[in-house]
Length: 356
Ligand code: SF4
Ligand code: SF4
Image (cartoon, rainbow, N blue to C red; front, side, top):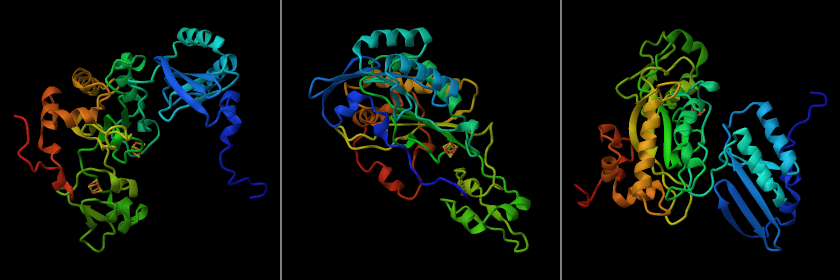
């Protein structure tokens, strides 16, 4: 423990602010988006700064990060930042450097965009790169979907901003529960109990308590220190595996993707909304996940055609009604769409108002 340094926290953010931001901190008058991917903020004293937003794959090498730093050194006096959706922003205080920066980005193939009524970066998780509980991959699905929707990243042609998120299991690390479109990894098989390992690796009471449906109980044979799973009650959430490594649930063939729609976090016009199930299952189909790509595109296209200006996906669906949403997006309505968990009653229709 000698000379151990601890509890020092992050460096103070002020250290990394461009001088124009430091001088005008809390004194900004307005901002505008002169073109997709470029923001202009103007301070009360007339000072201005341009932020050029570019895409990132989130998971990047140190070489890639150094490349971005080199660009920032050349055009932004070394200043850049990353956004809450993992895009990068080059902070340009000298307007004469804006066009040369844009030209360099174009030359290097670094896409600019993600502002205004666009589809910006997909908030996503670890997938098969690093986590032990995923039902699907994250980076691979995100790359496939963003390739397909790339035209929406560098343009403002949607009715409102459209946030897509992905989580590789229903721990939902990130934003899938509150996004316009959410891509979620799901299992469809119960865990396989390894009795021999369980008694060495797991704490049985916490494993039992981890199950939201009460499907796990102690093994009826008292001489076996393990658990049994009532498969009729299991809905394959995988929570028990998070607690106990002797209950693996992953099945690469039967697991797959569910799509949710209609969530948002802002309070603009309407309160925040949770996203809700749209497509219960699509297959895990690496490396390009064509079924997922196609289904996401269909929802985006129908939303772009049908929504009013400023209307988020959830607001559009609320206005036309869920029955209409399923009809226009040509998504079959199945028993899986009907909530059956604890407070499900509130999600049923208790009115005569519906569209044929
Ligand atoms: S969503 Fe699940 S599988 Fe993905 S990183 Fe989080 S815990 Fe791991
Ligand atoms: S997968 Fe979920 S529902 Fe099934 S037994 Fe484990 S915790 Fe319970």
